[in-house]
Image 1 (cartoon, rainbow, N blue to C red):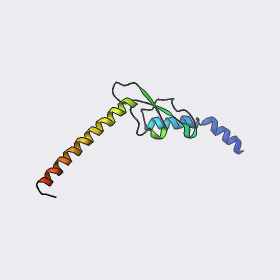
Image 2 (cartoon, rainbow, N blue to C red):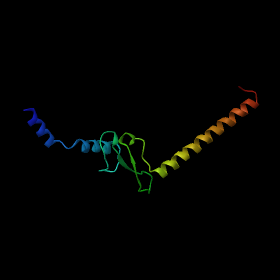
Image 3 (tube, rainbow, N blue to C red):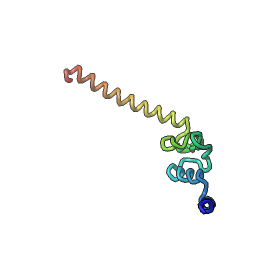
Image 4 (tube, helix red, strand yellow):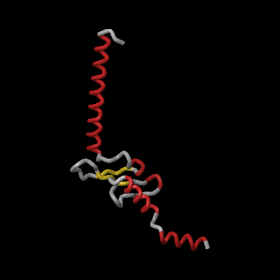
Length: 106
C-alpha cells in the first residue's frame, strides 16, 4: 500500500532539483533558468551579471547566490570603488585626529 502511494506522489510532484531551482530563481531573479547542475556538495548555478549593459554570466554555488550578482570584472570594479571610499573616509578621520592632537585635545 505504501509503495503505491509513493509511486503516485512521485508521478504528481516534479523532480526535487526542479523545485529547488524554482525556489532559488524566485528568491534570486539573477539566476539563469535551467543552470542548476550537479548533486550534493558539487552543485553549481549560473548567475547573469546585474550591471547595466553587461550580458556576461558567472558560475557559482547555490549557497552564494545571495551575495553574487555581478560578473568577475564588475565585481572587481565594485570592490575597488568601495576600497577607495573606505580609504578616503579613513584619511578624513585621520586628518581630524591629527589636528586635534596638535591643538592639544585628546
